Image 1 (tube, rainbow, N blue to C red):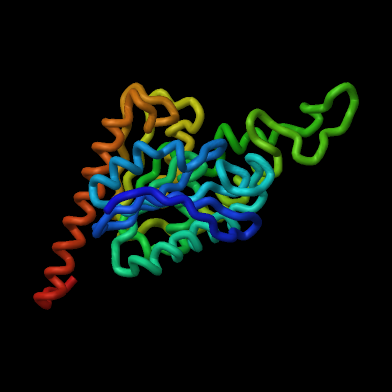
Image 2 (image 1 turned 90 degrees about the horizontal axis):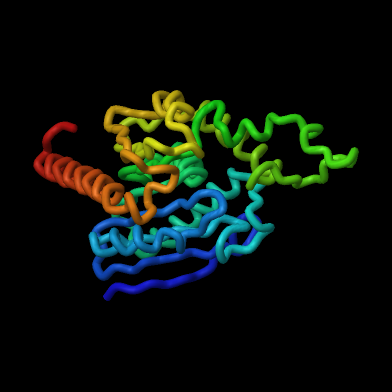
Length: 270
């Protein structure tokens, strides 16, 4: 029996909403990690697609986003968010300890997913990064480098939490710290990873993430473009193309897993 559930767990700083698209006898687990100013409900069509593909799909709203508690759109500690993601995975693992886990992260969620994988590489069988916020310098984190004096209003000082575009300065500072940790952290090694980017994306530029991708990519990583797409490659116009690429990637990962399992059973060296 397939269905949908919405539950809450206690996160590091707030109650976290967890969306779950349940599949009867699932073949694998699929974790969705959303971006800034989003929520997991935005990915319902993605979840339904992979639910029909045999996945148990789940994902949390980050603190201050969607149905989760917390100051709206403010994240001051991405380590805590990564920890929340790990707790969500653990709660699902209690039900399905042996199923392979695949992770999908978009934009800021790509940054969070990357750090989660760096810290939990043995838990994950494949990673999909959609226009991930990665790199030593990006258009988004560069906003934090703009002097506060540039935002003075009639001689008044900038208040704590002053916005820079759609972001709070506290969140930009936290992003910058997390990107530094990722840049200093390990690569993906043997983990299969797929990097997808719209050719018309002006929010997270492909060339900004390229250096980080080259550092992170392992021996089973591939990069692919979505021609004509902007930042949201899951939008209606490009959804089918994006989902087809992701489905082929997961199918290939699972086929490789089956081959490795048969080799182990038959005593072949790895």
